[in-house]
Image (cartoon, rainbow, N blue to C red):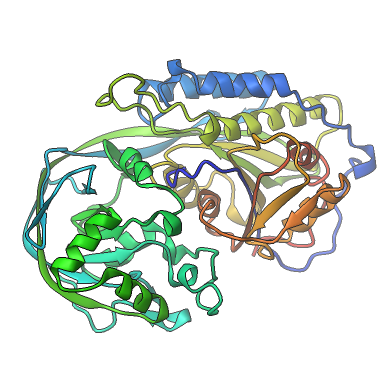
Length: 493
């Protein structure tokens, strides 16, 4: 997870319109063969995928090749079909941008150090960044949301300027105000949105102020995940030209010094920004110089299909991202980010589900619909594989009934309760609650939304989704069988 919050999330998506039909299938709930979840095999998949041999599973590396070979063999052994022209591998064109760590940065005349005080990068293939005395503008949360009557860029011309932006969205700071979605972060709180909006506003650059509580992760996460090669989908020249030249993060202490140099109180401005849209020139400038290189290579989504019987044209997707953040050769000692939970566990989860459903099908207990398993690439770098699949689906989106995304699985053992984040967004949660209730388990309402984003992107054409944290393994076992053959009371819009 690019957010790198090491928490468990199972996400579901569904698009609905009334439908009361029932599939023509003999595989009723009562007749389905019980699923035998193989915990030892599940653990072995996690152990293998997160071993040092796989080098942290970064896209376009030797670790990716090992991962793709492992997943391809696993799906082949199950008897599943490759969904991309007969292959299990869907190419995802990527570019890796690497910013030189010898960065010369002054903000408001104050020199700051790469990694320690800030992390900057550029997603341009132009050799590097050379910015001199660019005006800095505080733009609150950097949100332009007409539906909330909120525009932090109101009446601003951002050409040639650098936006300084708060992390998250106003709802987090004012959960009882009715603004946005309270503690549950909207897309306006995502770092990716903030850079996208700054680009739409014509800004030269954008700097997000890191703050541990609203970000939901410490500065070490920013330092580890935003340094080194930064991957992205290959963009057209027009798309790339419209993008901000420099993007990055400031520590809270660095931002505090910057605002003090401008004669302003950052805590006071943070309070104002939470109450209403705001923008304020800091009357200070930024000078930024560093080299930047771009390298192009394909990465791959792994896509495997178990064909259904009577409704084979309808798809249910199980997804998990196979990638993690690789290794950092600048570190002494252990250089590998193994990613056992994030997300070897989720990848192992869809493998075990696939095995059980494939075994059931071989014994005459197949499902009415087709089930496709997608291990996506580049999630840590901004949901790249899932974004690419959503834009280039191998099966029609209007025939994709639901998506279940495993972004880390339960490591806490047996649990009685679990949290639904985004409750009320998808009819699928009703099936989950029904399955959990049969085990005397309790679903809790949402509390925060920082842990969920990758699942939102995999089927961006589908409007509704719900995410669940700390899903008990027992519930995951039960979901393998009873959810899928049921005709939802909805069809994709």
